[in-house]
Length: 92
Picture 1 (cartoon, helix red, strand yellow):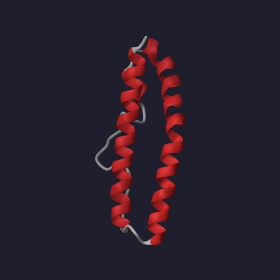
Picture 2: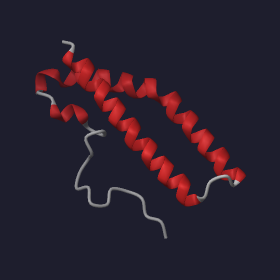
Picture 3: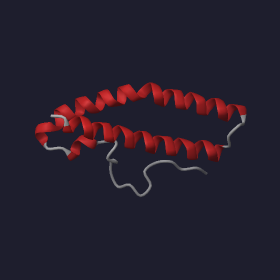
Picture 4: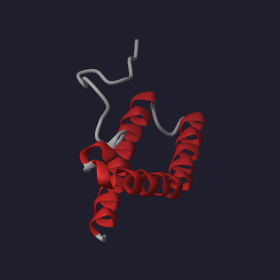
């Protein structure tokens, strides 16, 4: 049985609630920027998902490869979005 989730993670990850790390005075701006960054990344994430699904259906990757690649993509995507947030929050 495959179990996905937040094993070993007591609460939200920094990619889920990154604005909690900013002072109250900057949170509203942070939330606006974070929503825009996520919206901008949506098409890239969707394309990756469609490509993965196609490869899985064609049998060119195994279930394990699919999961491994998805987890790597998610991690890289979150890191990239957090970096963008940090850059943009540092501009003002």
